[in-house]
Every structure is written in C-alpha cells, then in structure tokens.
Length: 116
Image 1 (spheres, rainbow, N blue to C red):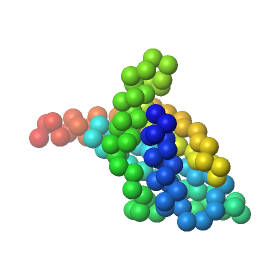
Image 2 (cartoon, rainbow, N blue to C red; image 1 turned 135 degrees about the vertical axis):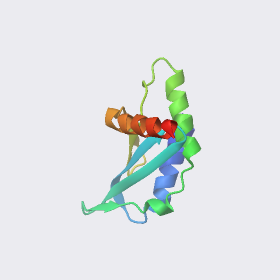
Image 3 (cartoon, rainbow, N blue to C red; image 1 turned 90 degrees about the vertical axis):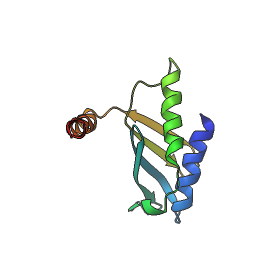
Image 4 (spheres, helix red, strand yellow; image 1 turned 180 degrees about the horizontal axis):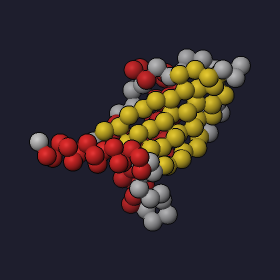
C-alpha cells in the first residue's frame, strides 16, 4: 500500500505551493464516487484551503486503497471517509472513518431513485 500513500502525498504536494507544517486531505468514498477537500497549515500557523479543482488524484487510487484495506484481516473495517495527514517531512498518518450519517443519506437517495 506504500505506493498508494506515496501517490496521495505526491498529489497533495503538487497543489500546495507554500511551505507547510502539515496538510490534511479529507476523503469521502462511496461506491463509484470519491470526493476530496483539504487544507494545509503554513509555517506561520495559518490554515489555507487546498484548491481542490487543481487536485489530480484519480479516484481509482482511493478505490484501490479501500479494496486493499478490506482484503487483509489486520486492516480496517468498512470505511467511507478517511483523513490523510501529511507532514512537511513527508511522514504521514491516515485515519479510516465510518460515517453512518453519510451512509444513511446515500441509502435514502438510493431508495428514492429505485422507486422511479
């Protein structure tokens, strides 16, 4: 999975044009859909939002990460959100999150679509 994490880090570094202490990429993953938002903390401690329109990480990378985390018994259970924290020394942390409210919204929308 190291290559996946390296790809996420490269994509973040491409859109952050200032020196930073840490950056956070918030990932929302659903079947067939991946969304991103994120920010970084500059050297003066100021929070700046990442221009997500310039962020070029292919959603297949996140779907592959999800698949791999589900294949290994010591990996994380089902998740639909993640936070990828990248430090200026390029060390990183990732947190996998299950957001039931998000899933409830998706389920509600899918029920409406199936009734049409």
